[in-house]
Image 1 (tube, rainbow, N blue to C red):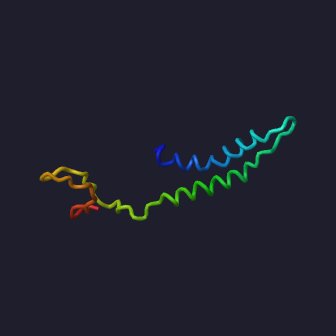
Image 2 (spheres, rainbow, N blue to C red):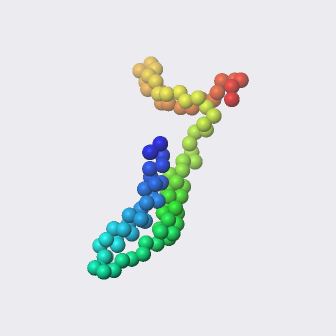
Length: 90
């Protein structure tokens, strides 16, 4: 599950991390800067959604089949593939 949502969470947090790193290097004694949480959240949300759309796989096989794993037959490796359900099953 972490592999599925990890990149989106990192892309959402990226603007915050960059802002705080930039703010730490620009800090002057006696001055504090307000954190624009709303703007950073919007940018993070756009990055996370963009990442989800970028990694979307429209060529994925239909989920309505049976996965047949790779196997060794007659000295050859037959790659894994999806096969349709047997008749009478959804």
